[in-house]
Amino acid sequence: MPAVGASPDPAVVVGDGQYPDGCLFRGGTVSTVRSSRRIERAGVNALRTLLEEHDHIVQEIDGGNDHSEDMIINFTRGGKRTGYWIAIQVKSGKKYKRANGYAIPVEDHFKDWRQSRIPIVGVVYDMKKKELFWVNLTEQLRLTEESPSWVQVPNSARLHTESMHDFFLKISTYAGDARMRIRSESEEEAFAEAVRARQGLDPETAPNPYMKALPTSPSATRIEFAPSRKTGCAPSPCKS
Image (cartoon, rainbow, N blue to C red):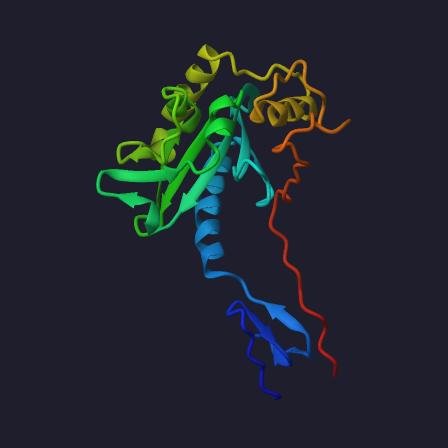
C-alpha cells in the first residue's frame, strides 16, 4: 500500500491511505478526529444519558453556536412537559479541576449568560471519577457587575440519579422567582421561545426565529441544532 504523505497539520493526513476496515482511499486530505473531541463528547453523552433516563427532553445545539452552550433542556414532571427550560454548557477533562472543586471559564460569555431569560447551567464532567457537577451560571453571574475569569463549581454539587429531583427543584424555584418560565402550549412554540429567551430576548415580544431573522447585532446569528441522535457516516465503498 502506498505510504501516507506527511502534512504540516498533525490532525490531517495527505495522500493515499487505508481505512481501519481495509477500504482504500486515493489521494486528497483526510481529517482525523481531535482527541479533545472525545473528551468533550464524554461529558455531553454522560449528561444526556442521565437527563433522558429521567424523561427530560434534550436538544443538543450545534458546536458552532455563538453562546457556547451544548444543549437546551425542557424539564418534565409526571411524564408531562413543564414550563421550565435551561441551556447547559458542558466542560470535560482535568483542566477544569480545582483544589476545592471545579471551575467553568466565563471568557466572553459574561453578558450572554447573565442576561439570558432562561437559566444557563454549567456542568463539569470529571472523567476520572465519571461524575457530573453543576452550577447555575446565570444566577452566579447576576451577583456581580464585573466579569469573573471563571465560576466555581463546588464538590458538593454532584449531579446524579439521587440528586436529580433536588436539581429540578432548585432550577424550577430559581426560574419561577426570576420569572423565567416558558408558557407556550405546543412543544414547537415553547422551543422557539426558549431559543429567544436564551439570547436575552423577551420570548413574548421577540420575533420567532423560525419565521424571520433575529434583530441584527454582532452576536445575532442563525442557530443550527444537531440531530437528536448521533449518526454514522461510512467511507466510500471498497472496490473489488
